Length: 317
Image (cartoon, rainbow, N blue to C red):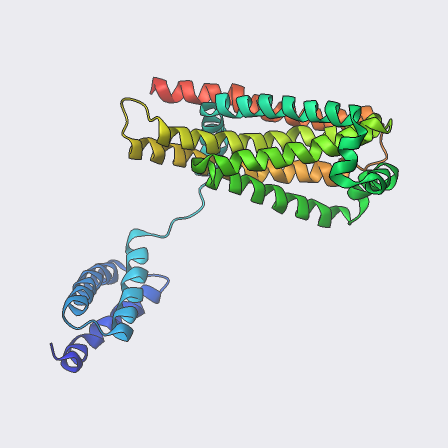
């Protein structure tokens, strides 16, 4: 192929296509011309790729064809209907389909965390081995409560949001490997267990539970959801249903995990706002705990009640 001759022959068509693609309004004749030029240029691009793959020209025509295709097919726009369907149907249904997994993880690791708190509180030498005597005293005197007021509330909320979202992303992404998820859960339980055990052993159980409960109910539930969904993905690979192949089962579990991941971004935003603004607020403990419990119960109702309805509606159609 004589590349220079080919460009000279078709360059006017490519320029015309670029002009039509960039215009905001087209009449009927121009739309027909756009479609014809788009099809013709796509053919030119295919010929160049197979016969004379000159990188600069192929890149130019690739961008032109993609832009023209978007103009012909229409650019996707945000649909409030689609957003509502996601929030009211897709997300709760995904959470409900995975509920045995994340409820199981929540039960097991909550029990394990409380065991660690009880054990460390009853064996002060254990806490000393983990963090040291002086560090334990500093934690009780000011470190634990001071953690919630170390930064301004908006900055603290953003830090918490990104940290928890990253932790959840690790659980979801590494779920198929199983061991990394269990390791992250162990680290989380150990951290809470040691800190809680130290606070309880020094007679500050009221401070510990009064400050961790408002946000901890929702935050820990989000982490358990991420871990449960991740482990469910692993199980789809290890033991796929009889009517599905391993690849298809893993793909379906991955789609559910992707939907859950989007929902957890919002959940952790809410828990971060509670931890930054409600947990350290000068309010009675009862009110702070009630606010956190209300958010937690709202999430459970969303996932289990609304999710069950969404799943049943999908099966009925």
